[in-house]
Image 1 (cartoon, rainbow, N blue to C red):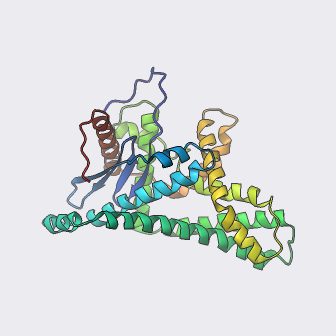
Image 2: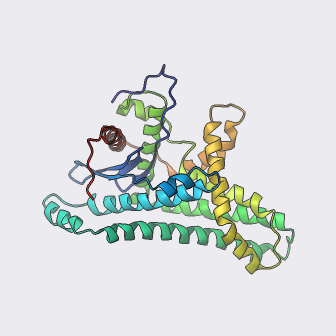
Image 3: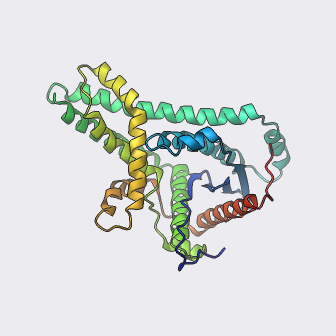
Length: 321
């Protein structure tokens, strides 16, 4: 696949993706595609139609609401691709038939169940990450720091510390380290595509593992935006503080999403691109330098996604219902 015409004034499509076990998922205009490296070194693909629901498409056009909708949708879709990678990457040659029979037995309710579990897990994790720092800031520092704004700053600082400790700890495990390498490969492919270069291993390896639209940047924005939004609301007790955080969570996510999009639009403006630096710094933990074989998988996934998008445009792609 050759790169886009560099002289073209057409803006590249803002593709996204995520790392999965031994592979990469990319989200196109019409399909989502995952490519994984099997233990026998073969590449296996999983693709799914991006269903267009009119109500969701309408909601995703509304600023501050579209972030929450997009996040839930992406979490549900990503869960299915993660489940595919988890089940398939370590299947030994010769076990194909039983694995395929098991997979063919999946019903719509089972698929929706996987998506629902992914969304609920995200919400539960986000609630824990939101509530714990608020409780710690109140219990540990309230007797010395009573001003709400200063308490919010302490709470934000605790969130960042907990986040850095968590990411640093899990990055030491071999499985997560490889996942972060595939995360880096995903970013490298998107950066290469957006630069208009041909998607070859050599070209992709020259690109950065960091990207302004990354979900890691979104996480750090929720912390920074939360400190600002929480400062506009007064609380008199720990429990009032906690339920405020829960009620304001959709607003924090919505504003953080808009901030993330803004930094992506401003990344080519020298003075303003600094706004995206906190997210890029966090990506130093969540992305690692991939090897050539991992880059090959990311390229294969991206090319397959582009191919299937084109087939869908031409009406040549049939999806299994």
